[in-house]
Length: 237
Image (cartoon, rainbow, N blue to C red; front, top):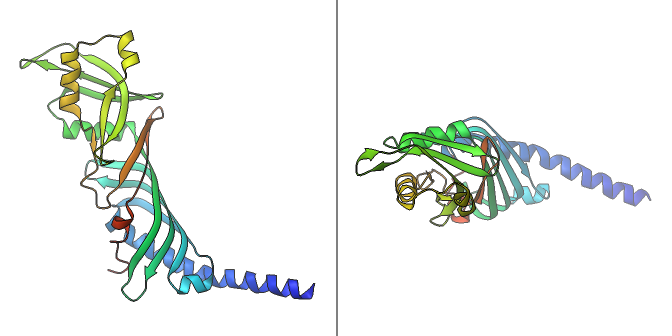
């Protein structure tokens, strides 16, 4: 019994010793994030190591990052960005990452920010407005045919991942078009002028978007960061 208590006490002591090292790693990560992901109102990192010994060898079990109001692009600020990375190995001598098992993310884009982005990038689309209605993305625009404006149209659909996850295209929902038919030339006009709705190819940290889901008032993105892009991050300035 006494031996079991002693073993438990030693394990607790090791966990306690690891925490200061984790705290130091968290501060380091938080300092680097603005240059890696972009400026933000705040970043919070949480580092977990299996043990003090693993941490000393540069091995981290998980890293969770939560950013508020992160400016991914000059014209796009996401309300919240969460990154969860696992099985990280650090080269302490070179102050760089050797490997990352997995790095996944979720990002929340508010409707107002999405509109700011598309209007900035598509200034010639008259009366352009994007609404996030329930699970649908609604696009309102006044198309032009032969250089002349027509009547405003509103099309409901979804944003789909394209180009291996570096862009989002708007695709009208066929079932909704059966309810409110829209001539194909007008639909083609919207697709050609609007897509890609969002282009992530210019981000500091390359991301791959797997899904974009309208949640009513905001857009929820899910995806991953390619391991090779994460390992390019230097751990010192």
